[in-house]
Amino acid sequence: MSVTDDLSQHLTAKRTDRRRFMNHAGIAGLSILGASALATTATNVAAQSSAPEITDANILNFALNLEYLEAEYYLRAAFGRGLNPSDIDGIGPLGGVSGGTPVPFVSDVIRQYAEEIALDEEAHVKFLRTALAGARVARPEIDLSTSFTNAARAAGIVGPTGTFNPFADENNFLLGAFIFEDVGVTAYKGAARFIENKDILEAAAGLLAVEAYHASEVRTVLFGRGQDTPSLLDTAQKISDLRDAADGADDLDQGLVGANGRANIVPTDSNALAFSRTTSQVLSIVYLGGRAGAFGFFPQRLNGAIS
Image (cartoon, rainbow, N blue to C red):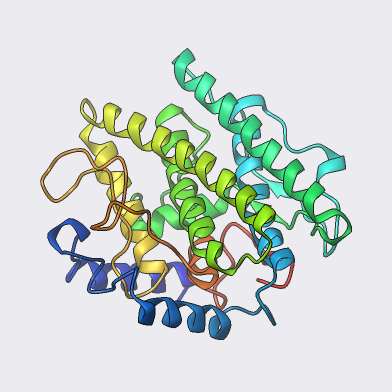
């Protein structure tokens, strides 16, 4: 059985008992603000992550890997280019990027959104590399082609032999972006409690804020377009379900429509706070099924201690 088939079965089973967040007072019974929850999360990170310890440098390099992925996606979609050679070297094997072509934008507004986000993500890469200096990791191998198809098959967006190209048109581009953006927000949120240096913590808060702006932008545009094309909302929900299936038993992720049938642009807990993901949960999503999988968007895994 392939990793995609295994993830599809997991997703199907989870859907049969899926409990949407808005029907409950908390996230499937987990109190994010509770001391026991914080302790459990910290224990899970230490036990499940391959990192020998959670240091500021390890956290920043983990973030850098994710920023490499986002930058390469948006730069190729918006400008038809990737990161500059001077922005990809470092510790660990330097990987190439497969897939990615300019999106044939029809809307000038969507094009401008894409260009702005692309430049933001490129700036994030440069910022993190400068902050890490000689400790920065190289860009790992990144798959922007078959990974999307594997994710789409696992989510039921296409059939077992179907394909999904996020660069084919504007709607596909937005759906591809939707896969990444929410993950980035929850990854920064989850890492915040482990950052010791206050300057780094402040910088990470700035990165999180920008990723949240990006995520909200993508979610807003998709929801708006979904009013005329309901299949977009259904597809976005399938992506949300896939992330939920990949990151563990908790029902954290939220699509674009809430339990009340109205817009759910900002996914939050009952306190209107963004939720967190551990490094292991993030890896399970970007690897499309965990460390035993085919490594999804990172065919050779991430570079750095947290991989």
